[in-house]
Picture 1 (spheres, rainbow, N blue to C red):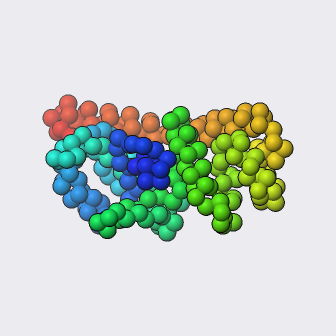
Picture 2 (cartoon, rainbow, N blue to C red; picture 1 turned 45 degrees about the horizontal axis):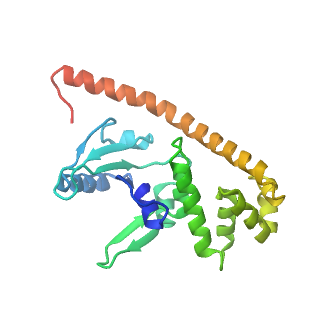
Picture 3 (cartoon, rainbow, N blue to C red; picture 1 turned 30 degrees about the vertical axis):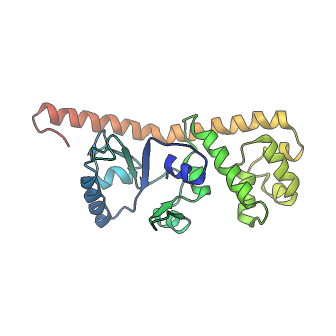
Length: 236
């Protein structure tokens, strides 16, 4: 659901870790724990690996020590900000297969774009690449939902102007949902650049607000683990 998915789609060259979104069921947690044992993966930071913490939106972080994956970090989540349930995301997934028949299940491009709307500045060029690649691969035979996706998520001013020229009726319909499309329809590149920058700031603020209470909970987790360690109980 993260950088590795972007690599599959061609929007990134490399990613140093692997992010997984998993189904929040007890049987699935047990299967994941067995996989972590095979990878000799230890939890490296709070929160604890508990379904309650994951359900709140936290990510649990592991570091692998098995031969061949030494140092690899794995992050696990069961919930993503502003995105559908696991079942809905799974229904829209994209599946890649390698030459040996191994399958890789990825968030769909629209869902991955939504997941990448974070406070981190490095994620926004990734969003632009994901949308641009999806558009270039499908523009010759576009589906209606793809046109909507491109018009709502394209981050290049020039590309937005081109899309509004190609699909004027759809752009006019979506203008109320994304007001900067009016600037794109008028080919106002200067104004569009400013509006796109402001749009990023608004999305980053949404992400900050979402994570603020979770960060406070992280501090509570840290205090609890320090207290357990000081008391001789240790921690995972």
